[in-house]
Image (cartoon, rainbow, N blue to C red; front, side):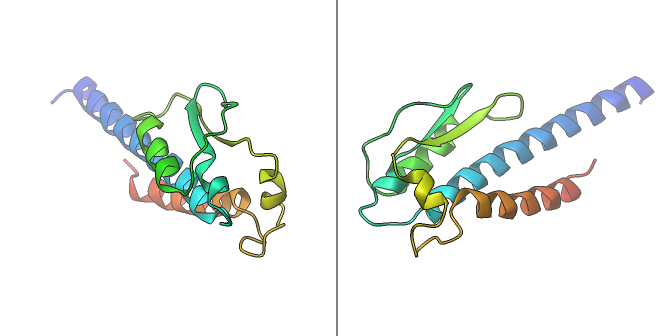
Length: 129
């Protein structure tokens, strides 16, 4: 084996690990936010919309989390390099994030950002090449 082929293998392995971590972290974060969204009618959970490239202005008219999470999995790119967004355009979503619901007094986004940051740090350590 040559030094050049060793470098190529290292590069491929590093890129694959990076892509896997980015996709898994995105899906974990977005799914966690959706699952943490307080439930009254289920509309707030269903209104989360995933997009790539720019945030969407859509507010899907669906109830519950299943379709929103399925959309996260379907739309999240296979690897790094593209910006993926999760948006909820309901007029009261910011109030929910700021603790207006006793079901989620700490909100949904902030607590999941903290949680997933720890998961990503562990994944990076685990996938060191």
